[in-house]
Image 1 (cartoon, one colour):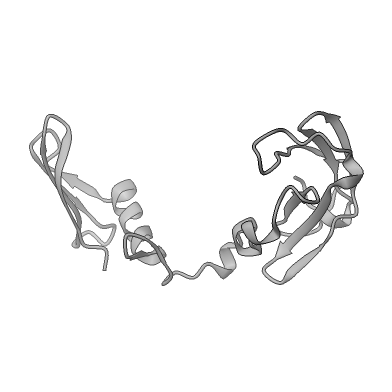
Image 2 (image 1 turned 90 degrees about the vertical axis):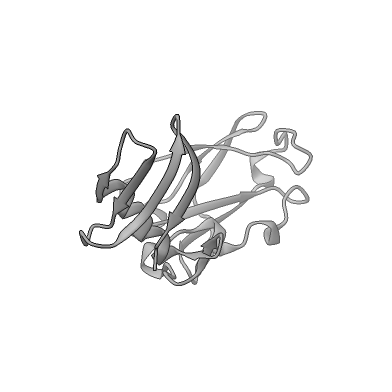
Length: 160
């Protein structure tokens, strides 16, 4: 969406808890606008039912006047607010906790080091059974992979 521009809209696919497409009326749907970690307000735009399970939302110009914005749609009795907490509905890079564990005991900071190495670092041993990927600092070995036939059989990571 363009920031602070009127006349925009987007489609919404709404599904009930039982997996069936939403078949109520647009007036039954609750719209929440999340424009920051502590900003959660009722939607003021226009919601129109296109067909079963498909809606069209035209936000107000004010709802688009944010650096980032998320919209959350729920139908009474079909969804539970606790199933989709605000932090899962809205991503704001400015509040990303780099030292929060994301997966497998690795923090966001560590995973970013690994991603940067794989995408931008020096690779040696390509085409052999032992590949080494050096971090973008040029000296830290971030990823070592041993395998045959393109299969990774052992991976060693240094993301610290």
